[in-house]
Image (cartoon, rainbow, N blue to C red; front, side):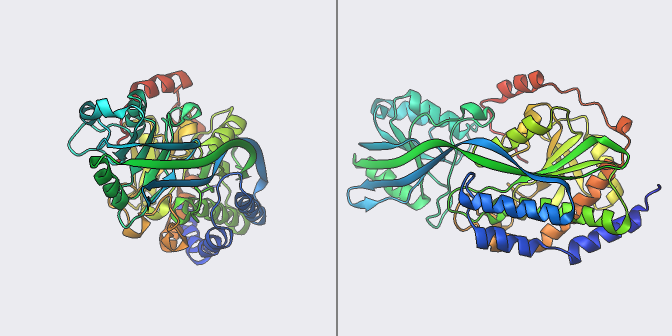
Length: 455
């Protein structure tokens, strides 16, 4: 059947706009359920809600896929200099500790700062800026933390660069190899304002008392899956997914109710297109929301292990979509660039396809590309020129009001148009994906100590 793309596009955007349930989903995920740390009761409420929504749409195989999560929790975290209590959040997977030790200001934790303070570092608690040092070769935070551990530092208080006494949860280790991404010592984050206080205390030779009570354990967690079967090449697949979990204590409006809602809305629009107009995708369209992105991509890694023994043609990951409007698609591997760009060009909105210069281990596309699967995230103003009210990430203020509902409607419409076009492209028109896991590993090894260029 010859598809009338003009009529299809008009229907898709009309439905994405006027039939949108984005605000309703945000109300449930962010306000009624709230923080969704993977394996928590709240996360289970979220996955049941998403599964029920998939079933209402009529997606085939709508289900929860359970797996065992390697997780962590903490009961308390406190730091004091004398009677002064410091703003504090532990790093994810911070081990327990009870320490009283001298404070040492190590600046940004780069080599020249360590050389100046090396005789003071053993057994101390270091105060380190998390931001990259201006005008120097950028060094990833995990490399700087490991250098401090090698110098004998007992723990680190990292200074968050945000202002207003805001503090985020952060991660340690190198997530390019998430299985081994552990902190080399206890690490916590303090606010920019209290970081300045600690620097002054370090100059005066004062000590800090740091206490963290935490534990590591295993628990069941769940991905949510569903699909619309293709009418022409049902053995071929495209994947659209995004994580539904959050860090502790945040409702996760931008990170990542936005991506979860875009998955739900794109699936809904395409399911209703099939039901009302009889327009089906050519290939299977697989929709998923992943658990534990905030815990070393364990949910997406499990999805790939269970569902991608045969490579899908493309997996698109949705994360922090309220950071800015959609500008295009960012691939990890080069072969699909011109092919995807050609599909975007037929949409007529000036969307662009780019390829990252490095393999990006910041979200759930990474487990796919690690296996040599063509994986992409969306180009939007995430890291540069982002919306001012989206500068909320791993913190309690990332609430439902940080969602940009109007832009989420556009995302759903554009994603539905792109997926449908890709699904109707003949399989022999797709460039061959010859990327192997071994080639990816070699590339990751070469990029290990670099800061990923995000723009």
